[in-house]
Image 1: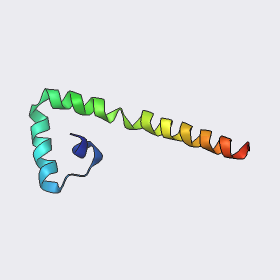
Image 2: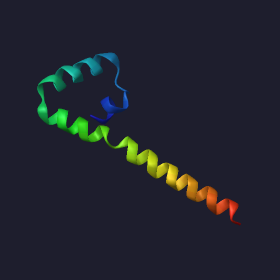
Image 3: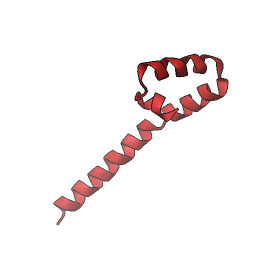
Length: 59
């Protein structure tokens, strides 16, 4: 699932997973949930980066 979401599957595996996904409601739900993760992770990374930058400039 994660490899598909990250786009790192080769063409054959990607196509096979998409065929499976068409039929598997459980995987469809999991993929939707997984697709919501990158946004909050990016925001967290930006917040931490900004905090480190603030720490460096205040010394």
